[in-house]
Amino acid sequence: MHPTCTKNVTEKAGRASLLNTATSPSWNVAGIVYQSNSGLQITQDGPNADKDGNSVNRELTREYLHRDPAWRPDGGRIVLMDATANHQEIYALNPDGSGLVALTRPASALLESLPHDVAPAYSPDGQSIAFLSNRDGEWAVYVMAGDGSGQRRLDVGVAMEYRFQNEQVIGWGK
Image (tube, rainbow, N blue to C red; front, side):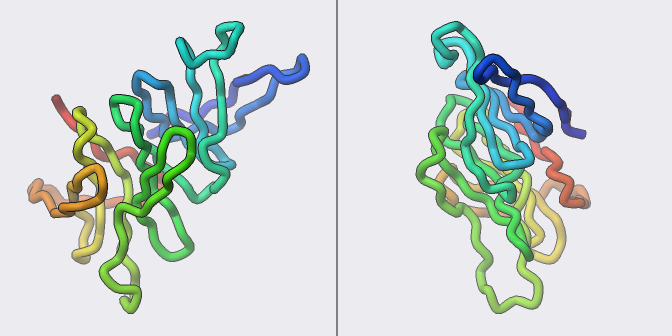
């Protein structure tokens, strides 16, 4: 289950601006990226704070179909799930919102039902991304390089179920 919160995140012209949803957070040295009801947002503090030392909250994307972000541990690229009308794919972009690129794509658009690629998670070294997919007819764990190449299924020996609730269901051990 993801934490969801309502809290003040910025001060503008003497009044608080409310963030009414914050789900699927991913932390690293550069800050926190999370899903909101209007897209993805980043909160940064420390050296990235404003001149008064307050945390900075900014939009990463305005696309509400961008979900379940995961930030590379070193503060590099962010992977996310793009939830289109009939299937989900995994994309990556830079922390400034530029460079959006698809990392997964269906083998063919002529399928009766397009497969889903969901729940991306970076490896601790940031070189690989694990994700769930039903591209072979059942949910399974897959892994790929950070650029989307070398996609392969991992045999984990456990039946899986995914219910499209933006679950962060994969984590890496060290």
